[in-house]
Image (cartoon, chains in turn red, brown):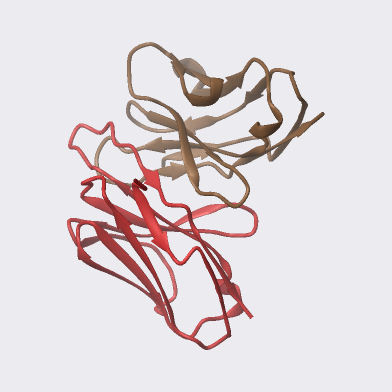
Length: 115
Length: 113
């Protein structure tokens, strides 16, 4: 069973469209993340939710909106897509413990191409 | 501020040769350290992690890493590289509290026959 699964894996869309990427984890974790990986492979944190509460909200355009209906799901909606949004988007999850020792697990990624 | 530095952007080794990928961290408390591998077109897979105890950590696929507090380093090693090891490798430091992980910029490994 895939621990962190995200769909779709590949997405090609035109500028101006609105698209969503869905993520689900079956690890029982309480924290989920969205990362963006650019063409240089640099990983940038975008958002993090802990028990459905937004914890990390980095500087990203307002066109990006995360939604967490429950602890096991974190979706990413992108409005008015731009060419610069082309990237790989990774969902991840971890179980946050007060004493640390947290491990983060990643999904397979969603390759978004805006044309 | 917490940070992770991977000094080598790209490394090329011959198949069968040994490998060492460097990672340096800056963290105020006891660090929790990780190495991940990303094969082409794939997600990030956990290779190994260090939380405490023995400073030499064994991971999957024959990899190991050594935590050296005095050097603030957590270098990844493999005695004999296989062509399938060609990938992007990321070092990361995890939180003592909170949920923010810090990733290095990655090292791209090419393996030549």
